[in-house]
Image (cartoon, rainbow, N blue to C red; front, side, top):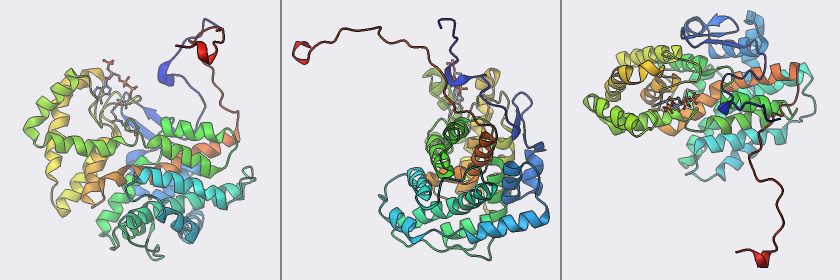
Length: 379
Ligand code: CMC
């Protein structure tokens, strides 16, 4: 009907009800299942937060131990998946490798039981367990090495850093990394989570749900921004160049990476926490010279973009944290995926609990009926 109003990007349009995550974009507050993100980052672990997100309540110690044990048991990849990854081009982006590898899990596990709680539990365990192994495996494979096996004596985050770097991480590095995973685990209906819910609504398997979300997260307007922030800071080069860079970018109407958010009109609370994590790492392992550039960008941007509600988002400081942990730039977004899989799976479960297939409508702007023109008569 002609009275339909288009909302580009579905801004402000509710498309589902959800009890998972609550954002107050004016106050800069974020809660998972009613718990503030700052408290979770201080007191919880990524796996405990994952359990909370997916099943709605904090686990008992027995539930948490069983969940952690199950994840530890399923960290390994089938040799078939490893061999498949060895055929990927070494120059390919790790997000593409991850999307393909995650989707390949659907080849191994049946999709016909998505209404069975045990199937859901097992799928959650497999995905949370195997995604980090896939990211680490591709990193070693593209360097021409065999992936190394997970270590059962290491907790989730320490084990990931070990598989990636082949060294047991410093405890501070492992804890900071785990806290980063907590901060990135869920954020309501961002593009990748919406994509996960759309895919889930067709009742396909959870591996396809996660693979579609990984593909969506990869773009520079979404998870890919953390990689671009470091490139931007390097291009700016020194704190005193920040002002000119910003003015020029704003004049040319180009986006400042790591700034702006559909939901927040103040500084993203995760950016504040991540900035603190970066400082913790710098105090222990030495400062990154790009940190001064980042702070200068934030300071200079405040009078220019602040009045329009554009402030640093989660991606602005996360790259500096990962860089200090020795993680290559093109793995920043796969690490975002390692974490966000928790949120995607929480939404998968919630979608299945009250499913209706997503099938929005459109306002057609194309030609009306046209007369066919034979090939020889076309110019
Ligand atoms: N730098 C400069 N101007 C900006 C920025 C920015 N980063 N973000 C928004 N604006 C301006 C934009 O140019 C537009 O101006 P005008 O009204 O004059 O055309 C206005 O603000 C509204 O922007 P929009 O792109 O329509 O806003 P949106 O809600 O559709 O987009 C966003 C949100 C995150 C895609 C956008 O802020 C952006 O592209 N930021 C840079 C990329 C980035 O950091 N992405 C990470 C997002 S947070 C984590 C995640 O999702 O992964």
